[in-house]
Image (cartoon, rainbow, N blue to C red):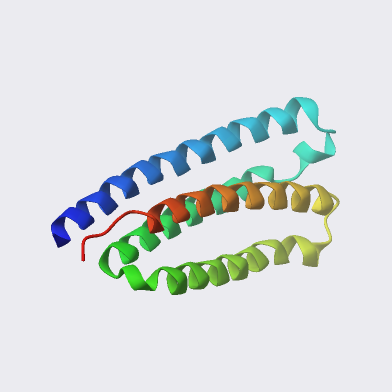
Length: 139
């Protein structure tokens, strides 16, 4: 019976990983198109690509670790999600500190882009986490 719930979790983890990866790639493509052709020029001047270099690995790695931990201990979901959010918010602050300290010309635009991407990825992550928690498990 444990094997059945483990299989369900593993199948979901693989699907969720590919969904997150495809979401990240779509966001990168849309962001590049917007920064280059739609938004004012100052949005493309800053290192907007650094936002994706930060978000994609941390999002994919953290979600995969949460799903693995959840597969082993179903009761730890809330604690795992809370600790992940704390670590991610701490990482966000560390990521933004250099640009805030340098007071660069494109700081405002970078923060806007950063926050939009942060909230989109948080919404996708939370939808996937709710689906993960709802997977039925055998007792």
